[in-house]
Image (cartoon, rainbow, N blue to C red; front, side, top):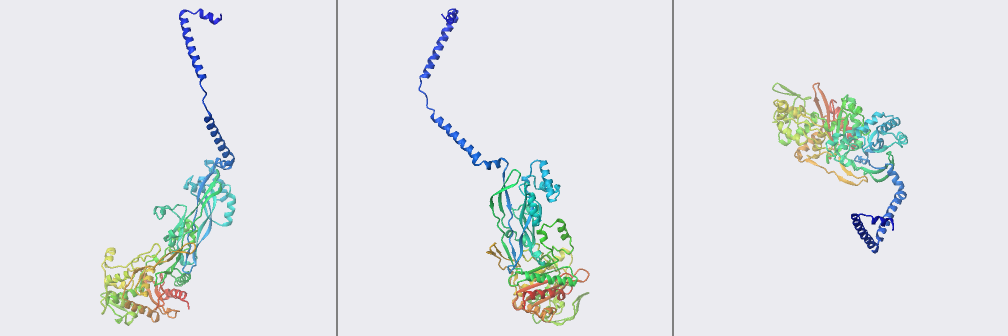
Length: 630
């Protein structure tokens, strides 16, 4: 008997019953085990295959990452990033009417910083600024300030230095090659013709300002690009600007460029072909400058136009400025110097200067008198050296004797025009309101609509205007002064050129324009600007013929005889306009040629230049000799 049997025999009754229960449970458990082991084994092949496939996939991917793309992923692990950088588009070229370029694009080297690629920690950045300062000789504080203004992690470049000469740029490039986020950029920059009269026409470009953005001139503008700020550069910004290119560049963790991934080339802007003739522009500019110097004057302007089309052939305003100053990044000091110059070189006198017209307005008065019937071609008046109306005396510059309308134009007889405007002797006069009507018909007192900014309106007064502005009554003397281009009458040189063109072409007031066509970079014409007529049939053809005869007589026997011996017949009108309180006069002259088939009309003013025939006349003579050579 085993020790377990002995133990069982010695169990008390209750324990014996417990043993019987345990034996029963043990038997059931043993029976269940036998049933399990007697069952048929299940098939796990599909599970093994799935596990094998996952293992093979992971192994393949691991090999691909470590071996096939190992180098690429190493760069990514080092912090490689993709940067999108803009490639500025060259602006379109501007040509004169012979195909001569008036503005070109030159390569300009600029040192730029991309803040996003600079070291991240403050100590590292300061060390970077100090290092770059030693290389560029620009203070570290200035560098830091410029970066902070743009934004410490901006993706847009900070221009640290512009217009670097080529040799210096190459030297700097070797020194910055290992610096993160620093590049030497080659950008197009405008190079303007040095013909003195062109600057106010062409204008200049400059960096976009907050004011430009607020004005919403172009929703695509950014502070990193240049736009037209004045002249044609501003007016035709949309044509000239082109479309910037884009380079996607890979840079490493230190912001150093590794390679160009993709590149979208910049598209050059469209070209402008102007009506301006560069040779005529230069000739007028030189002649005007010479007469300003000889007469002791300070400024002047001239406008020449094709009276058949309205195309501006030349436009000069002196003194002027060099627009290359601005394309080169004019300093605030340079700009303030121009702004504070008392001779106003930035002021385009040709379109913005407002002056009393003097006697150059008399052809319009003659046309009005003929059209209204207060005079005819044969109406004559015995014109003394002065006339008296009540206690007032209205002078002429000499005794003229018996005068008709042609002689009145040719010799600039004030008394005759007093009569047309306000009435005298047997002439009733048309009055101030009719005078204003005809001045307006010929384009005075309103902008011409030329494609340049900042054009002035001029002023044609009338009784209502005087009452409103001066709170004064209108007197006969006001009408007399208005009839000879004095008093409150103000015109621009451009308005006088266009009014003269309207007399020359038979009564069409044309809208002046500088742009004749737009072309692409291959010279293909994209757009042609047509002739535009503002008003037509201003005066009957025969009445304008009489006026033109009078202007021709000005040259053959009147005050413009200096233009008598020219290559082509010339018609003209001189003018001497008083201004201020010191009996000073502006020198005026308008003309057109050839008299029988006008191809050029021109207006010239020299501020404080004295007599029109003496100082303005030589400028017109030089222009005609240039445009109509023998």
